[in-house]
Image 1 (cartoon, one colour):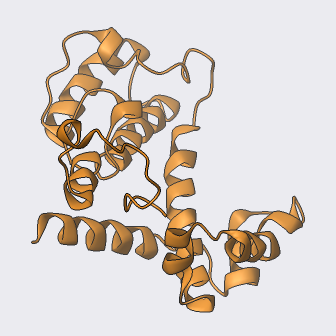
Image 2: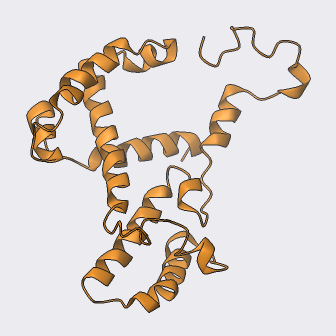
Image 3: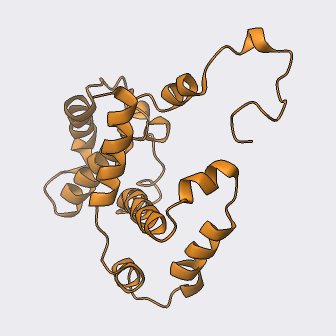
Length: 191
């Protein structure tokens, strides 16, 4: 069984592991703003992406000189996440994207999260017991739903919006991701 201790794993190690599933869930989902995007929690990760997008946009539009990126980065990190950047390696040079000329790539991470939340919403609509299936480790019907709605189409559609509108009835809508984060962290922090 998923995470309920019924599989016998860890028997005889009770003294080493005295945490409830709720305590483990709270620990792995704790919100703690930090410097490094790939180490960010689920709630602050989008802020890392948005910060990078704003810098990229301003460089491309000629509103920010490349030499001024570190200062803008440090200021934005302090303003957005409340963290001080000790050096450029932990700041604007931490990602390989820009040095590899992958300008405009960061937003795709946030688009992916928003798309996943929207797909999950519609999968739950079509399969109200989706969460129970996941808890039981039964992914076959969920995979079949994703295959039908997304995977089988390959590059048939000209855009993500076109696919979502055809398959779900609406274009990409950030509401589902915002609702997901709001519900998850309101419950987690009991606020």
